[in-house]
Image 1 (cartoon, helix red, strand yellow):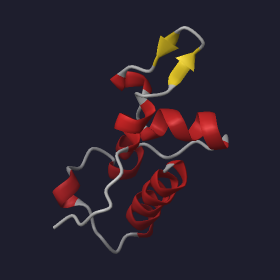
Image 2 (cartoon, one colour):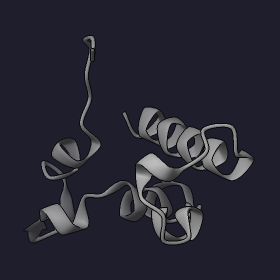
Image 3 (cartoon, one colour):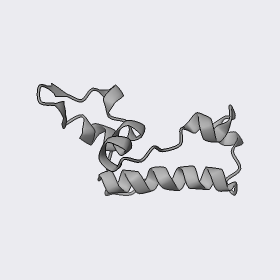
Length: 80
C-alpha cells in the first residue's frame, strides 16, 4: 500500500514551463525526459533492461533490474 507523502514527477513537471511560452505536455514530463534535462544523466530504458520480457518475468535479484529500479527511484526523489 502506498503511504503519504506521495509525489508524482510527471504531474509536477506539467506545472512547469518547457520554454518561455509553453507548459509541458504529458509526453514531455516523464522521468526519462526530465532526468537528462536536470541532471545530464541518461537513464536506462525499460526495454534495454527487460530485453523484451514483461515486468512480471524479471528476476528481482538480477543486478541490472535492481540498478534500473534504484536509479529510477533515486532520480524521482531528486526531482521532488
